[in-house]
Image (cartoon, rainbow, N blue to C red; front, side):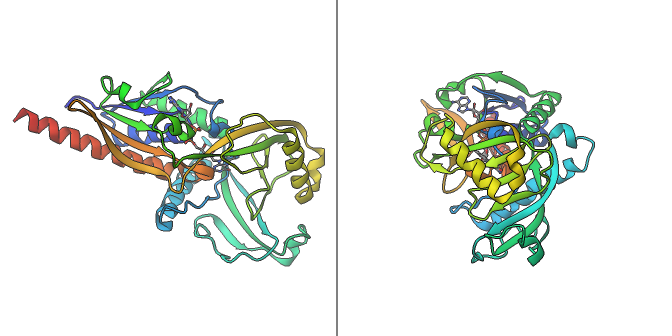
Length: 341
Ligand code: FAD
């Protein structure tokens, strides 16, 4: 069989990192990214990009932990290299705070992040409404720079990228041997996945360079995540809302909630409002499927449905998707050598 032609559909953090993993693990493959939108117009551009996992109820915890660990290790190495500022990856320390002590005082990812420990009484004095907290150091991606860095890496490895809206995965069968579906919330329409639903998130990106520590309320609703250039203030989680229009009342609510945790934010400037739809599911859809029409087959690998935690696990799920692409190639090579006999 000639060099397998692989199309990755989608250019958010999942599509770009999956294309990179495929190009790295299968140098003989010809990899193409097809997407109707690229950075800065994807959901991934809106994200805060902090590495704090979201829990997928339908995926075993040891699998989620493995995805997170692989992602953390990969980004930690970038943060510790000369590439760090261009890639927008940096370490950030801070606090996750709770009004009441949570049932689970040690989350499954506590030994992956750095220096995880309960907050001291002195630290908790900063948050008079909260009774318990966890201090740790994690990583943060500044999302648009990281997506551009991934695109640059892809171009350097010979991956082609084209703007194209795919109406049906089957339309790619005559041009490609394998298709990888990384379309995020777009998979709802593209493959009719009724288990996939949007969870709308509105955030503010502000100029407040004096804020150096992250603060996350344990309910996940209010957060302050400092990046290299901007601080992300959040947020909202509105299930089944497809609206991409910012809501001014929500903007005020987010700003007030964040200021109650970090009063110095009252001096923040240049407030920009962003909205994104988290591609949510009980579990990430990471699986092989074979489409077939009139005896012609098209192997597909799905990698979408990362909900509120796509940045936290992207490298781990990309590696798994690349492994599944390897299985598809082995199956294609097996069937082409059988056909020759
Ligand atoms: P997307 O970024 O939406 O990319 C999908 C791609 O597919 C796009 O390029 C789109 O154009 C393309 N596409 C779709 N349909 C088609 C089609 N038919 N044909 C061609 N192309 C198509 N996660 C974290 O880990 N940490 C955080 O701090 C964090 N904060 C967040 C804050 C907010 C407000 C939001 C909304 C999300 C946040 N997330 C966070 C979650 C994270 O953003 C997502 O899990 C992640 O971006 C999903 O990436 P994706 O590549 O699957 O989707």
